[in-house]
Amino acid sequence: MKIIKILLLFLFTMSLTCYGQKEKTNSETRKFIDNADFTQVNRDWNVSAKFSSGIGELVSFFPVEAIDLKSNQKVKSLQMDMTVNVAGKGYSYFKSSWIDLNEVDEFIYFLEQYIIPNLNDKTESRQSVTYIFNSKEITFTFYITQLSKKISIYLKDNGIVDDEHYFWTETQVNKIPNLLAVLKQIK
Image (cartoon, rainbow, N blue to C red; front, side, top):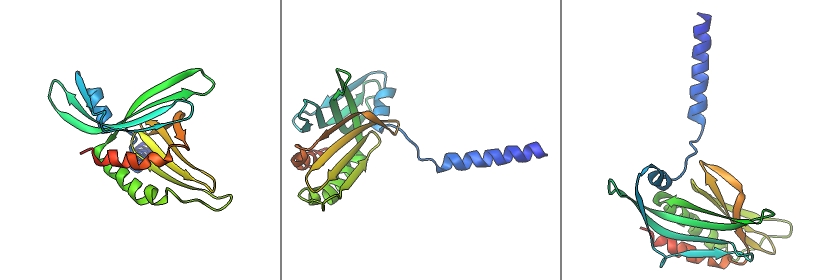
């Protein structure tokens, strides 16, 4: 009887632990591409937003349509390509990430409500403000101080932020409205 009580307590504790944890997964687009045997990805390079750093790093956002060639199912999303130079290692890192359409809507809302109205803001001395947007595969931050503004983009795998491969720029903040325009064309 004691073993049954311990087992029931263990199962109850495990179910609460599993229920309370937020599922950390990649985008539906990445899952769609990974699960298809044959995939075609159509990109529209006419509709893109690009951010570059002073050391030649580049992030590009553009609409894509992925097609499972066996089932002919299609998924539309936003693709983000990132090329960064890995500090002290002497090589570049390239990765594509996807933002699902429902996340694109949230990204538009975030930019319109919190970033665009604050593009010209400054803080008081020794203060800062950071706005953070989290999707399944990227974290986009907008950082404001008295003297500067900065964009940072971190990649994620299964919800875990990759602190080694990220992009940031201070000189490209004025291009955020271009990103918003691209996001609005992705439907």
